[in-house]
Length: 195
Image 1 (cartoon, rainbow, N blue to C red):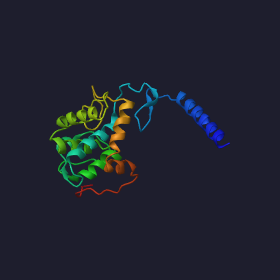
Image 2: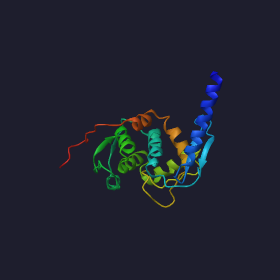
Image 3: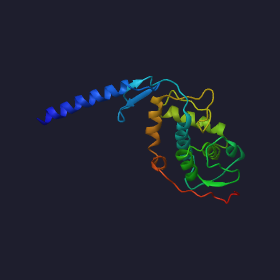
Image 4: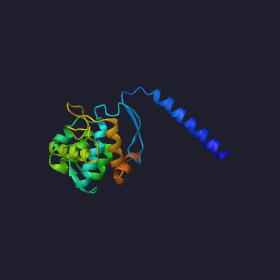
């Protein structure tokens, strides 16, 4: 009797999942077996699309390979002028790498991503080379970056399949896992600001 119930549940689950896949409006989607990496369902899984803020996962992975979380970073003029959401980082302010990671991953602060890139490699341009090496190394073969923040630009792309590779590798880093699971964080500017 238990076997029949389990089999019936499996059939129902399979039918429900199949119907749900048919309703996907996105231009690209993928369901991957987390253990094997095998595609269980794909709708244009290798279609190249702009990576947007998912870029910051790779930025943080590469930065954590070179920087310590408590290391201090001075915000440069270039970083401060990068188009970004609030909070706005100000040239000359000093932040810990950990704080920049939380700002980049929780708030999608582009200037925090650029600050991490500059602290890691001296320039965003040098850092992007490391990002592209990293994604090739982890098997994200259809991904290319031109900046550390994910701001739009020609020649920058990823696929939903590659994003599964990026995310599974990002979750190996405890600080990334913590940042993306943090719902709220009270943060005080490192120096007083004028109103």
